[in-house]
Length: 145
Image (tube, rainbow, N blue to C red; front, side):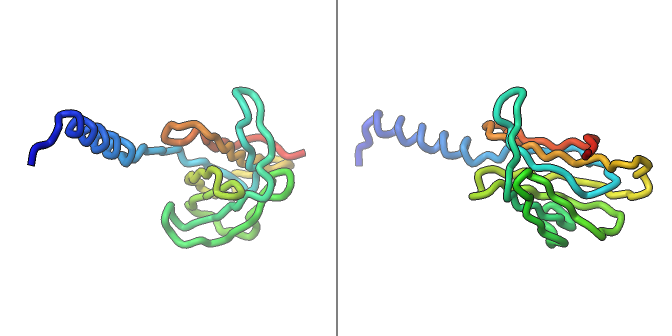
């Protein structure tokens, strides 16, 4: 059987493209050290703006692929709260409605850190970029008024 050079090149491009597309990117975020497990889930709309990710699913997990300890649905403002959780190391997994985008990160809960009247919030920013974290990230420290 004789194979044309054009078909061989096409096959090579398909195989090369497939192997590149299935190579996983790695997204590793730092562990957030928190005094409370509550915050906001928002969409990154542009370089400076965000909007609430209402009805996002937020799970508290034992590990990245561990068992789910608690599940909440963010309210219309993107706010979520896990109450009555013991101090320890956990993962928070936040997923936008219709599975549009998601982000998971580690948290270390230590309620003795809470020395302020208003507890800081965990802010989960869901992005849509094509890098490993899709432009998503989490931060801690904004107070709720």
